[in-house]
Length: 540
Image 1 (cartoon, one colour):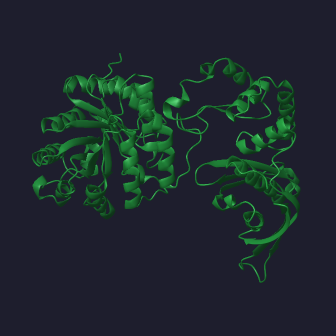
Image 2: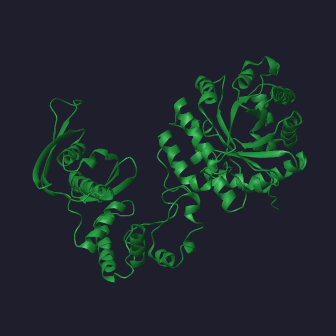
């Protein structure tokens, strides 16, 4: 039976500590100071900043945070462990470092699995519980609010329920505000979590604040978190975008979106009058991705670029009648948008909806709809794909509506040369020459680059910059190549997808050709044309 918590809800973010353990992620102090305000804006209640005393840059983070961060919604939490076996908390330097961090909240990791106490800490179960009680009591006396991170709790409970239950009770009896039950190895499934949380809720009583901290090794972290909430947990922990070691933590963004949109709980808190909360979910997810330098996962629930993207023609026909028929929630609730993907599966309804998304009303233009539908299917049969190249599709649409695409320049010719002098290991040089007409003049430009495509990009920009200085803000940020018929070897058809940005927005174009250079040139010129048009530049 589900028992939704009646206690005030708490959202605890551990991106800066647990999330930073992800392979390939290395957050600097500056990175953490940039991410923390975004988490605060989102409306989380707690931001775990790191482990002062154990990690030097985390010690520095807390020193700087006290002076540089002005948090409106969240409180900073310092992470650390219980005292060492056979000592006193008051004498343990790492426990003292938690106090010295000046963080008002301390997250205290403590073993709740008898096997870990005996084998990892090499102490007795009795001493481990004493370590929990002594450290919590000391921190409370020092004026800190304590969240006990009950490490390996679920595995420990399945091994020895009495011991893990006693460890939880010891934390509460010593004065902990919260005991967060941890699926540290990430191997639980929702029914197990639900049953165990129900049993612990009965043991600690209705007023104790239980939390859940789930890892995703079984692919169930978000589901396990929701199961724990249904069983009585009112404190949830996780990381933005599911960052974390191995397969990551519970994605806090999915958790809070489900809690608010599906369960009707007020999970996030936002100071009155300030922006934030659920409508900022997608923007904040992508802003943090930019800081971590980890590309957003397009298929992330709620915030991914594909979360509300529709491709099949039958879906499109229904969406035109009522978008809710094929969407589980309104994408604007989380700051995202519905997208129509244009592919060889697209029918007229898909084209009409995509046109509307791009600002074109085609409802009374059946001739255009028919021509565009046919062109898309023919193009995709020849290797094009428009589902990830909205800018190229918009140019195709403009050709059918206006009879031609915007004429910013006319290409006369282009060529690229790659030369290497010397043996293996000697770097090659690339040079490209572009001849075109723009602004009433014939322009010849030569560019060098790291490879022929880069050289072509430089040559095209140099040729157009005097006429269209807006191009100076354009930057190529992604370049993907796919060989479409690999059985033909080096004679295979090539597809190139490029993504460009002007610092405010990004757009993608596609090119297909018998070789890499022809495909790249098509995508580059389309990108320049779309970018100039989107900036409001008129052809000169």
